[in-house]
Length: 113
Length: 156
Image (cartoon, rainbow over all chains, first blue to last red; front, side, top):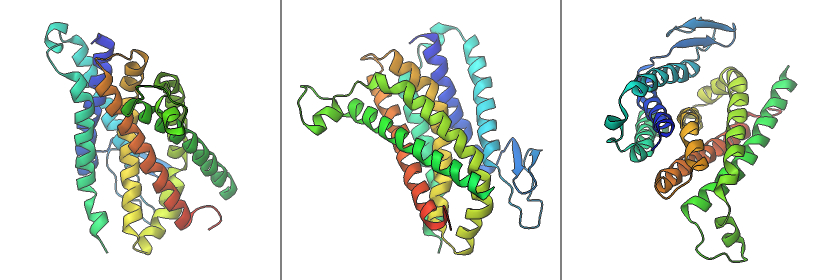
């Protein structure tokens, strides 16, 4: 695997690893209030008056920033060490695991009446 | 203003159809390749050159995703509240799953592009599974969007 291939794989893996708990525990980077058109840093409650608070944009930003940081750190690790990791298997198995985790978290939607 | 959102939603839907076609062809060709080229429909679908779809898939995914991000607040204000009022939890949960599947797929696009542009026997399994994962995410999202649009879409 070339270094570029490996770093792209690490980004995808890191994004999945960070994203799954981020959506579960609401580690949002920012909150958007669509009625008022206001952004707030971090997790903020709805502003009231029936206005929803949107966290999903913040989940994507949290996971993307975390994955970028981890990818940058991984770029500094010697190639000899990184070559030992089975990136080609991890790049699909980790996101698949994250999808199963997200599905499990959302399971109450399927059983609620 | 409502007309503007509806136009964006329709463009979002049309681009999703193109994306669905491209990723489905590529996924079928990668997961179930033909060993001997025949003249039938299934043989033609299985025999496509997956590499030629990669850039189109990425452009369509990113543009459709961006449009989805723009119209998402309208969904939260005008549609999700109705789903909750009528206790339509399954479609609401399907939409929640859609947004997470698409976010996870978006992060896979760089490695997906690299694996297809340097397609080899060594990355065949990873390339096939990644393409299939993205295809499943696109199919789930398309069907969910269709169901949500039936419940409270254009003109409702």
